[in-house]
Length: 124
Image (cartoon, rainbow, N blue to C red; front, side, top):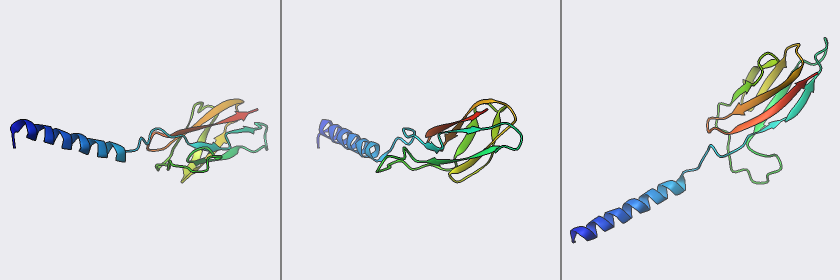
């Protein structure tokens, strides 16, 4: 086999192999997480409910075929720690517990594939 033919043959095999690898890879960071409830309210007066249970799922609830899977563990955070925090979490759920302050807090959930979802708790 001539050297030029061998080089072309090796190059073709390399391109084909790279194409097969790329087809088999999914972009896990290109998915959304749905948080339920997406919006909720808590009354800050004494004796009122002080927590909300949030649940994460892999995509919009109206999607018939969900192609994304959540990559565990999920990481929950809040944008305004002075208003409340994630007091516990596990599996698909987390408990947001408010302080006595009024305002809106955005809760963010991320999975290990950089999927992200948000919910908002308004404290009045």
